[in-house]
Image (cartoon, rainbow, N blue to C red; front, side, top):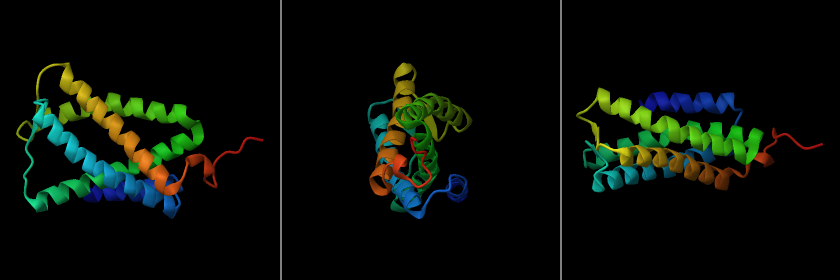
Amino acid sequence: MTCAYAIALVAAAYMTRATSRRVVGAVAGGAVAGWLMLGAITLGMALGWWRVSLSSTPGFLALFYAGAAISWSPAYLVTWRVARRFGGRGLAACLLVAGVIGPPRDYLFAAKYPRWMVFAPGAGPVLAVAATYAGILAVGHGVMRLVAGPAREDPLARRNA
């Protein structure tokens, strides 16, 4: 899956016409997202919201981190384009969409692979997953912006006449 997400990153960079600086920013955002994913999984397990079968071996954790980092990176190129075109409202819509799509995605995954992931009953885990997706998208986008600058300053950004 990590290789498939790496191909998705290359495709997103091509389709969004991202500069190398923007791609580096997206990967930096993905690097932060990988740590946030590990932290969110650990926190959710500690609070009893979910149980995830993660091996604690350094090799597995490194592979999981790399997969999470690479899988989030293309999303930041998309949010960059949305922010460049629609500004803060477009970015807010992306965060809302991530929060809405995240829980069903994870719950479907858990239903298909119950030995890997199980959610506790109730609304708490659903809201926690939604907040996790929206929060990781927001933080990673912010890291990309710190590295590569605001979307409105890109050469392809629309200028007010």
